[in-house]
Length: 163
Ligand code: HEC
Ligand code: HEC
Ligand code: HEC
Ligand code: HEC
Image (cartoon, rainbow, N blue to C red; front, top):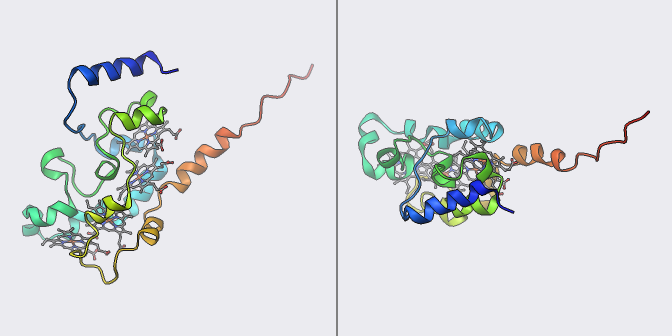
């Protein structure tokens, strides 16, 4: 059963003709609910990708397209949560996030190898060709997220109260 809030959201989306992409809300907005993922991301080069560019290159669209692709449209620098997971405007509310299906319906993206390769292609300055499996390990921010969730699912049933 969906909560009535979900139906209201779907109604609003349907009637406002959402064809455009959702707006970005920035990585700080994800931090409160996903602290482990946020910390892991912040250690990654994605979180500092704009800083690799020299001052003049920071205005060069040819470099920004991979190092800070959402800067002009969404005022978000670097490669952030939403570059990979999609704009969070509609899926970030908690009742949407808890509904995996609804979250995807309103913009949550499952990042694929194909998506990585839009930037990690032959023109990027890597010594070795892009290896999806190895690269995924290097940006792991889901193992701690899932570990945090697992014990919750296995909470033993409450013991009968002793008299
Ligand atoms: C109000 C809290 C909250 C905010 C803000 C939030 N999330 Fe979530 N997110 C959740 C909850 C709750 C889940 C469900 C899983 C769980 O219990 O940890 C979830 C699940 C997810 C999942 C896994 C979905 C699935 O079904 O596999 C991703 C990916 C995700 N969030 C990304 C983000 C991103 C990116 C942002 C910021 C744009 C964000 N979240 C903001 C609470 C939040
Ligand atoms: C097609 C996407 C793409 C474009 C366009 C692009 N880059 Fe990159 N760049 C990458 C990727 C991916 C890496 C990381 C490669 C790796 O380490 O595997 C990278 C790495 C770098 C690094 C090395 C950073 C480090 O920490 O060692 C520099 C410097 C850099 N790029 C500068 C530029 C400049 C300047 C431009 C514009 C002329 C540019 N890039 C355009 C994708 C791109
Ligand atoms: C470079 C792309 C990229 C960036 C940036 C990124 N993620 Fe992810 N994220 C992924 C991928 C890929 C997965 C799924 C990995 C797998 O299981 O195969 C994932 C998984 C997750 C999950 C776990 C989903 C689940 O099924 O349990 C959460 C939560 C999440 N990301 C949140 C975030 C947050 C919050 C940020 C920013 C602080 C962020 N991600 C930044 C690519 C990215
Ligand atoms: C929007 C473009 C973009 C996307 C999408 C993207 N990356 Fe990146 N990635 C970069 C750039 C640019 C760098 C280099 C950052 C820097 O050092 O300036 C990088 C760096 C990395 C690094 C660090 C390389 C090193 O030398 O440490 C890894 C690992 C990585 N990406 C994995 C992934 C994976 C896995 C995905 C898909 C889930 C992904 N990336 C999606 C642009 C992207």
